[in-house]
Image 1 (cartoon, rainbow, N blue to C red):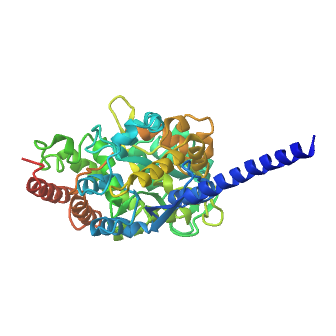
Image 2 (image 1 turned 120 degrees about the vertical axis):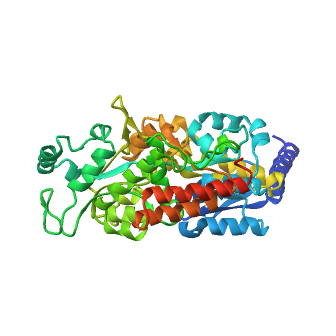
Image 3 (image 1 turned 180 degrees about the vertical axis):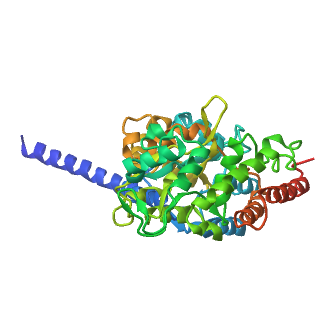
Length: 478
């Protein structure tokens, strides 16, 4: 090659390199730093989402997009979010919202309707088709079941039975239970499929032991109790469990789908609801005595089980992962999981209709188009199949039907099978703007009955009267 040719080639190569560098510089200069701030409860599912986003998420747009979660303790979560949204500070671009908040914050103008974004995006359309219908109904639509979409599942949840397999599978305990009740003490997952509330009550009574009494292959180190479930005065803790009894007994809470003709009085305090609530109350004496104080919330139930004080509990799957941690749980190597109990039907099958748990995440109305696009891209990333499988392997649950059908789903955690099998039977609270007033008064009345101040019927009569008046004043009952 001649000197001139070599020189021209070098200049050309340098020009290409310079052009590439200039292009990179321009691209870098055009990239924006965008922070998507999300309010969320402080617990495992949101902590894992933050960790995954920090380590893995790269925006497709080329912008430097960061998901920054504001972790808020559960006891003050609603009040903190409500205060921020109503103040007009526009602090959050996304919010993890309990499903019952949707009506209040949508009608308040805070949560964005997503139909136009879904209609324009094939990826979001495919995502919606893969979500379990029960979660779309509970987490996405408002009014319930309408074709108006607002949210996506951040952490779907249900409550399985957590039980001590070292006790339930113990030969001496099995023989003693069989002799007393002429029923098999459930040991395997399949055994638990035939457990109704009568069995649960008997199991609870059977395993109540005083300190020093025989328990399994040893003795009880402290007073020991049979069963536990939610009976807390705070937030929605007792209501979640009591609603399940009500639905299984064939009753109902006030249902907004029936407005304006559906009444609270005669429905909320119906004979079947009174019977269901009394059945719930009759089982509580088999629980650790914290139930008498109104403090047996979901965290107390978790703690009592992890401390080795109770044979079986019903609690959210979202709280189960620490039970397997040897550094936190005395029963980490003794625990198994199964379906929640239910009411036996005339044909012998078990009705397990229960309260849905978990939360959707939503986008706020003040986001501009660019922020909305970046936030929806985070949604698509988090709800992509590979990321959801990681989330499940991290101890939590997915709303994608394809992930629930994945071969590794049930093996990832021992409660996953129960969640997958019960999710289609889950129902939700009311989600109207008046929900907080309804819930607060209901929790107070339930607690009076739980702590023995009034009867089940008196509590439900008081709740029905209050709800009738409130909903009439709101124009929801005529």
